[in-house]
Every structure is written in structure tokens, then in C-alpha cells.
Length: 300
Image (cartoon, rainbow, N blue to C red; front, top):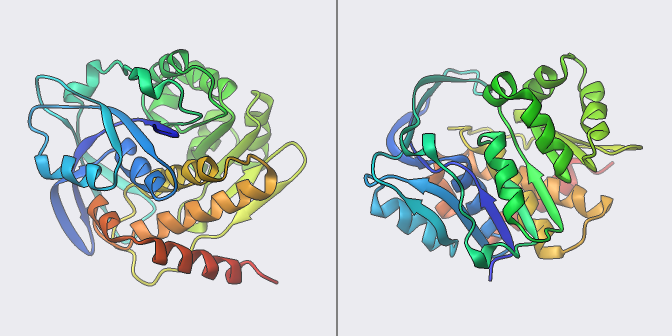
């Protein structure tokens, strides 16, 4: 029985950074976030793959004991993304995107997933995010993410999603673009006006900030010396945050702060290697160790 349901993209990535290059590696928002979530709670993944999806990639997902009943295989090729990072690792240059089977993806939530109490909607089409919410029975917590592409092409639907979820998650550039303001505090207030209980804005290597109606909390980025690939860091943050809240089953201010720290922990561990395969080597010991380091970082 899963506790966390994650819906998003599953893909094959070609990634180049100043520190290396990998081809045909496992990628996608649902993959990074479900692996991060799986360190904390039983997780199920919903997404679509093509006939060319390598068996070793599915083996990696299943090795994390992620339930894969929600992965649908369609005739055709898997979604592909090719990107490059220069020494400013905060910005990816997209070289090529091939939608392939994801172009006509309609998420079908397996019956045993419909009772999941914790849901993360990765940055897929907001209309698909809304269709997922129609299929879920009675979730305790729904977290959503988005991206600039959807803000530019389906702004009103993005707003609908924010209005329907408990935690609206996005990065700083997305928040500024969505609400047409350079000020993140003003953007967060607009998110909260749309009925989200919490607004969490990711700031890349600088951490993340959570806003409620009357307070805010900031978690720093972990000071890493060896960053190899930031792809999937935001999704890892979201998956760990959702998974931790599912594990503890407490949605309050104190626990959300801990969840954000665990999100930053998983994101920092993930970026130390190239691609998602690095997450295969993360252990509970490393997670706890870095969590304790975070406590020292913010202590005064």
C-alpha cells in the first residue's frame, strides 16, 4: 500500500556539465521525486514510457522499492531531453526536447493509488495535474510544481492548480513570471491568496523559502564543494519533502520546516553526481548525517 503518489514525467536525458557528460540516462520529474520520497515512505509513481525504455532504468526504480503499477508503456519512443550547463549551474540550456509518448499522456491512476494520502504533482501540463486530482479520493496533502513553459502557455490553468493544492511549490524565476513581480515576498502573498496554505519558493543553490499568512522560514542551500549536475535537484527537494510529511503524518509549521531541511538534504546529495543514478548510492546514514549538519548550519 503506497502512502505517497507521484505523477510526472519519466524520460531519457542527455546531460552535459563542465564535469562530465552522460547519454541516455534515466530522468524526469517523477523519477527524481519518487526516488527521494522512497527514502521516507512507500511511494507509487505514475508516468508513461515508450518501447525503447531500457530495462536497467526500470530496475533502478524498482530497486528503490517504488511501486510501478502506474507506469504505462505505449507504442513509440520515451520522452527525451538534452541539456547543457556552463559553470553557472543554476541555468540549464535546453538543446533538444522530444515529447514522444508524453505528448498524448493521460494519467490513469491505479485503483490502489486512489487512496494515497500524500500527493506530489510534478511539473507536467496543469490540465493533467487537475485530472489527477479528480481521480484521487481524499488526500491529506497535495503538493504541486510547475515550470516556465506552462506559466507562459497555460497561466490560468496553473492558477487553478495552485488554488486546488495545499502547498504550491515553484522556483524563484517561475514565481516572478507567474505574478509579474521581481519581489518574492509579493509573489508568495499572491500564491497564498489563491487558497494554498503554504507557498514554498525554491532558490537553487541558495536554498528555499516557505511563506504562510503570518510567518516565513528560510532553509539555506548546503555549501557543497563538488557539484556535478543540478538536474533534478528541485524534484528531489519536492519528493523528500512530501515523503517526510507522509512518514511523520504531521502537517504543522515545525514539521514542515524539518521537511524542507530534508528536501535540501536530498537535493544536495543528488547534485554531487551526474544524473539520477547517483541517488542509487545515497544511504539513510548519509541523509541523517547531513540533516545534523544542516541543524548546525542554521543554529545561532
